[in-house]
Image 1 (cartoon, rainbow, N blue to C red):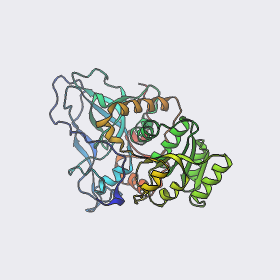
Image 2: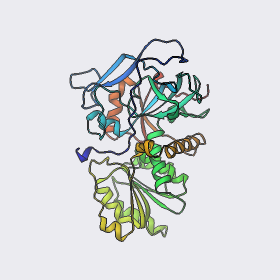
Image 3: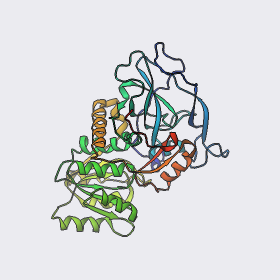
Image 4: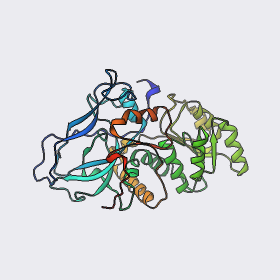
Length: 381
């Protein structure tokens, strides 16, 4: 695999729903076709679907609606699905998981329960939920087991909930469960205006840490300041080492206790010079395209702890951690303690534009694909 293409965020594989319905299923009457975005071949997802022979994307309006595959399966009518950098790499064929073609991309999503299997006990038709899957959320309907779904509390923004699982789940597990971030810690967030970066900033503030955010451009820095960061570094006109050292000196702080790094490259190398003895490094991804080298001898002398964070693997190895984390995030969202900054919203037919916003780093926060013409849908029925 080309190291420039690695980005460790994403989730886990799920089996494709059966095409045969389960007996005893409770579902409303409907047609049997849906809108879905299919990847027919690997390539550049910024090319318009169905627009040329070079486009890897095919927008289908007659894709079969998936049936329930087990007695505890639930079908969700998707209202919103989020784009993550891993989705972009997967269509390019440069992600570490390479599904067989054709496939429907997409990971985290939100919507309403559309049908339930005969043994489902946790949900009813019409319940608002959010979740994540390995593939398949860029479609009007998704099938999942009831154990994989999370109920969105009444009054919570359902579109925002669709952006919660992967980005905010990654940061919450990294900062709370792995680094055990707490008050008096100094947290340095690289790529702070991206999807995972903004989530790390907000979770850092909820934990009571001193948060230093690094981004590029005045618009991104102003948003970070509005979120209450203690110090923001604008890489378009400042050096990260000099800026952060100046801030630490003004606060009489010794250094950075936790480094949250979804970027990699030279920025990581520079940031290592800011870390305290006993600091923790959270390796989230490599959006710069360059995998950094962290010298083991320096890590030894300074007693650093390096955490690799492959969020989706917790579904297999520590599912309770993942479940507790997402329930806590939904609670924080509904209490207004965290907010989802949705930078761009597109329809499924405009998926190539959504990928373009992600590729060109125009997004400040999350890029979403929504159904119902992008209307914000509240979970109160």
